[in-house]
Amino acid sequence: MNKELLGKVKHKKEAYRGWKQGQVAWEEYRETVRAAREQVRKAKALMEISLARDVKDNKKSFYRYVSEKRRTRENVGPLWNETGDLVTQDMEKAEVLNDFFASVFTSKCLSHTAQVTEGKDRDWENAEPPTVGEDQVREYLRNLKVHKSMGPDEMHPWVLRELADEVARQLAIIFEKSWQSSEVPPDWKRGNITPIFKKGTKRKTQGTTGRQHGFTKGKSCLTNLVAFYDGVTALVDKGRSTDVIYLALCKAFDTVPHNILVSKLERHGFDGWTTRWIRNWLDGRTQRVVVNGSMSKWRTVMSGIPQGSVLGPALFNIFVREMDSGIECTLSKFADDTKLCGVVDTLQGRDAIQRDLDRLERWARVNRMKFHKAKCKVLHMDRGNPKHNYRLGREWIESSPEEKDLGVLIDGKLNMSWQCVLAAQKANRVLGCIKNRRVTSRSREVILPLCS
Image 1 (spheres, rainbow, N blue to C red):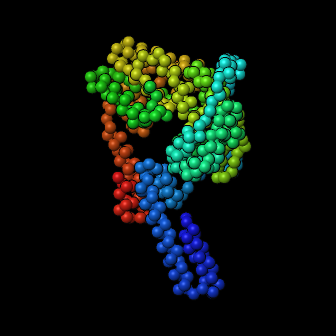
Image 2: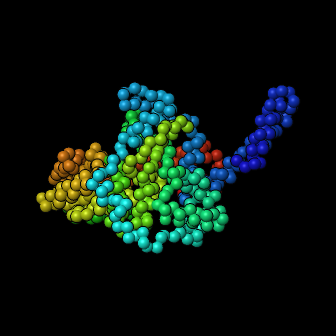
Image 3: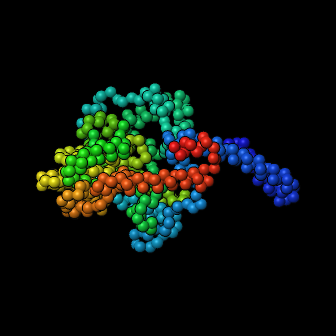
């Protein structure tokens, strides 16, 4: 709302009070209301034109706009605590959720702690200290995506981009000092968590929140799906029985042990300045849960990758990079989701898949991670498939007639009919948001971009 619109709305409220007190005539009040409504309508039309113009690059703003027009809001409902009691107060719910989020943390492993020490390989301290150039910072600021949310400094990206020339030098000094001293400001180590229900029972807390295509430049869900299923389809077209194993790590981003991650950074050739800075950035982090404005107490973060950060995804990719070491079959990764594919019309092929599953289980155990066994499934392709049983650790993997892979529904016949139905339903929901007056404007320049 601009200054002129705020003035019109304020004038309307003043006119209403004056009319109630008999100081303003009805005709004058109605004229004031009409002018205010007309101004609001124009402002809304301009905003919807802006949303439509940027919808391809900024879908979040469009969905946020239509969501705000819903009559109902989904808040965090009552929750059961550890003793089985139902908590209804926002403060209590925040504490219950924070306790649950903290319960999945992984403690430090002493064997790896011994490897990652301050005294290890100190030759880097005699090398030239790292520097951060003012021009480099200015270039990053000018290329900031203004539609992203604010960071812990509560500075909007648009402000930083517009002030790139003014703040580049100061920020370069701060970043260089932080890098050389390996000290991170305490504010950079704090995080507020907003719980979002995913699936399951709403009163339970567990439903809340090369080959790697996730968090990798030039790769995406699309490249992952195309590369993987192009190979699967080729095998099925040749009449080869094929099995696809879908694997998911349990709370992967929250359970990455910091000391194991730092030791991997050192093995991958990161210099001492950078490794020490990342270790300081990870250590001593705290978090709290916010429910309807009520906040829980701060809890120490013992493990995990800081989500929502730029550096976090890169660190996770480094952590899982060695997962596919020694794998015989086709393996594809997207973030914490992994797919394993192999031909199974011979005993050798089935044994190869089982050996790969054993390797993956050993990797998870060594790195103090766990597979979510309930989410791990096997999809048997081709009609003549022997439908062999596979084991992950000590548990058998359940077979499934269909699986949703990165949003795409896959079945044993590679039939995409149901996926087309789901895509049509999703498109109809978007059209419903436009049609059901959540988008007020009916002008061509608004409707066409939203529907295209």
